[in-house]
Image 1 (tube, rainbow, N blue to C red):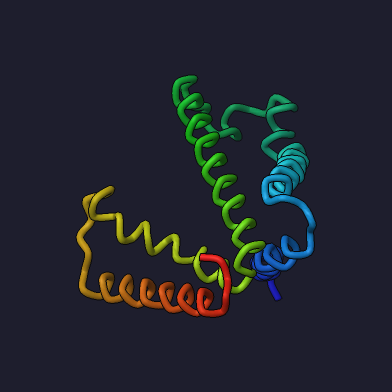
Image 2 (image 1 turned 90 degrees about the vertical axis):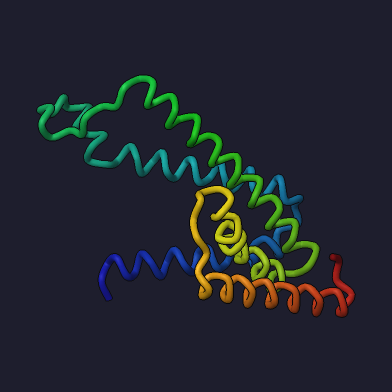
Length: 160
């Protein structure tokens, strides 16, 4: 098994275990997300400190070996977008982990993964994209599946 394939499988197993771990932790969703974010930031910081680009800049490597530095304005804009995307991801995780607690891991996971389909449905409004018949049929199938999963959860006495 190649190194990239092993890393891919590891990431799938790690992310796939989120629901199981969250169901076993007796903390509010917000606390779980804050702890995960803090631990993730520590890990990313440690990985960044060990990268070759970090070491090359510390050694004052020749400019030809380093990527071009963006302008200060571009860096501020990128930082603002980075912070906004981080906040959106955090809010998404809070809602997901609360859904794990309220409706269970299976139902919450199925409904959570309908998010990209919602983006696809909004693409004509947001990005002026055209929807093909195949895309509309796919959206309809996912919407029907989400409805059936939700309806089954409701008949089972779970929270809407």
